[in-house]
Length: 143
Image: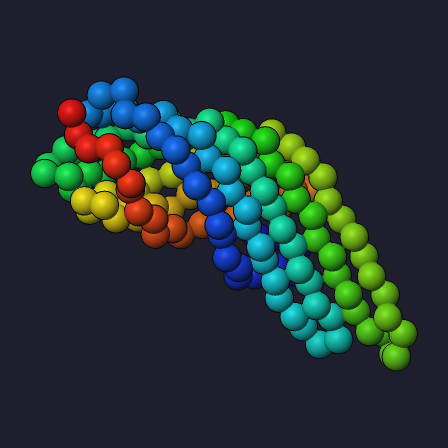
């Protein structure tokens, strides 16, 4: 997730519209929070994104559907590092915003949606990260 950051949690939603059985379009809104600690220092980072997403379904077998997708959007993020060098406390803030892309692959098993996405911002001030997701489809089926 960036320098000094490791694991975290993602909260998001993505309303989508199925154009046909092979193609869906959606708008993803997401917040990712990361953190890590080392000797004498703690890092906390956050990234939010708004992305227009498109998914192409590679297979359509009784609501078991493999897909690949791509998105384009706006990413914002920041991080804070708090350290204690020899009894004193120092704080570093860093952040920015950027346009970026989101390639992804996944599989739908009825209502359950599994995916892996890489969030790639085009500016170094925003953390890039790999997301492994489990989600649920509400409404919508193959036509």
